[in-house]
Structures are given as structure tokens and as C-alpha cells.
View 1 (cartoon, rainbow, N blue to C red):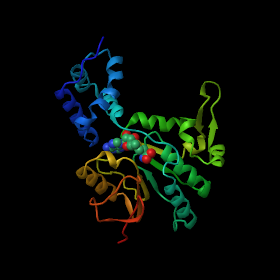
View 2: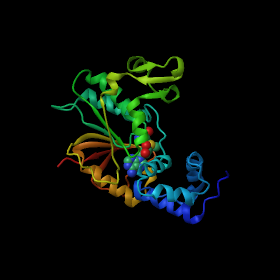
View 3: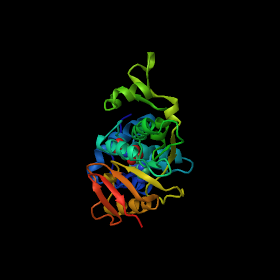
Length: 269
Ligand SMILES: C[S@@+](CC[C@H](N)C(=O)[O-])C[C@H]1O[C@@H](n2cnc3c(N)ncnc32)[C@H](O)[C@@H]1O
């Protein structure tokens, strides 16, 4: 069965559906990316047109398939200890300590978990057995399942310092050759949940650090403002927001002051 080319209307409908679910706009220049990511799913469902696929995913009772469409269209690229400068700063902050409590940290677009596990390894080195945890969330349940499993190709771990690799990761053997498994004690330190950044934060917790890295880049200015306003409600006065080094909050908010590249601080009241 050969797949028909996507029509303008079907592309617009898929793009609209994705925008409604994620807040991310897919312009017409993303047409081949959309088809490249969805075509294998159409094939698996034995559908020969995007029109039929749209009918299928919007039918009542097919919410899981719709979630899968969103999953397939999000960009999930990540790896351990990405943007090392943030982890150097985290180490410095841990050495100074937070008066009276362990730091509350949220990885708010955690993808498949490499970011929160990198945070967790850094915390484990400094806080040991203290009662700390790292909150981690993403829109994609598929990514959160990978994070929960903690099984990764070794190629994602090139930046993990070898001492941490030995201490916190188990080397895969047999069918898992070429993989690492995050050791169970560290896996238990992650608290994973689904969260859409476009929605208000409902949990009452206030964070000392929020990692929001390499995700704002996908949103337009209006959606960036919405996301930042939501996260401001969850950030402790004096708390820090980390964004990706190719991202900026210029023109998005005055409440956060740049501290160093890709790090912003919420003014104390
Ligand atoms: C490129 S990854 C970044 C992962 C990690 N923060 C890093 O820097 O390596 C972007 C992640 O943002 C998530 N994402 C996209 N839109 C989102 C939304 N509206 N709410 C929550 N997460 C979202 C995607 O599912 C994806 O896992």
C-alpha cells in the first residue's frame, strides 16, 4: 500500500491539533518533518492517507493514539550532562548549601530522563543519604516511561564523568550490551509526572531551581510568556531558572534577571 502525499488541509489540521495539545506551532516548513515522523505510524496502522489518519486519531475513544501523535511530533533530543556549565553551577551551589533545607529542583521538560538523572547524580554526590528528590515532568508519556525505566544507549552517556558512571550506572550485558541502566537507588530519587507547560502549575511546591532547557525554542513569543508566567508561580524568590544556551528570555519577562549565560534569577521580595 503506498502512502498518499499529505494535502495542505490535512497538514493544517495536524498542525492545529499539535498546537492545541502542546502550544507549539508547526509552520509549513515542517511539512517533511511531520511526514517523516508520522509515516511509519500510518504504515503500522495500514492507513494510506493522512486524511484517514486524522479521522482515526480524532475519533472518540482514540485519545491514546492522539497522545502518540503528539509524542511523535515532539523533539526529544537529550543526553546526560548536556550543557556542562549548568552542572558546574549546580555543584558550586550545593557546596554553598541552601539554608535549612535540601534544594527543591524540577526538570520541567525532562524528555527521556537524562537531564534529571544528571541532576540526581550531582545531588547524590553532595547530599548522599539526605531526603532529597528531583521532580521531573514532560508532555510525552512515552518519554516519561523511558525515564522511569532508566535504560539508555551508552552513546547518550559520553559526558558522564567516569567516576559517576561507575557509581550510578550498571553496564548492560548480553542482550543489553551497549546500554546502561541507572542504578535503582538513583531511579527512586526521581519523581516523574506528566505536565504540559502550557497549563498552570497546580502543585503548591516552590522550587529553588527549575531546569527548562531546550524547549522554549519551539514556542512562539506569546506561548513562551504563558509558560514563563506559569513557572514563575512555582519558583522560590531568589530561585534560579536554567534555559538552554541557545535560548533567551529577552522581551519575555522582567521578573527574571540574567545571572549568567542561560541562568535567570527571580528577584527576592
Ligand atoms: C529537546 S527536549 C529537551 C530535553 C532536556 N531538557 C534537555 O535539555 O536535554 C524537549 C522536551 O520538551 C517536551 N515538550 C514539548 N512541548 C511541551 C509542553 N507543552 N509541555 C511539556 N513538555 C513539552 C518534549 O516532549 C521534549 O521531551
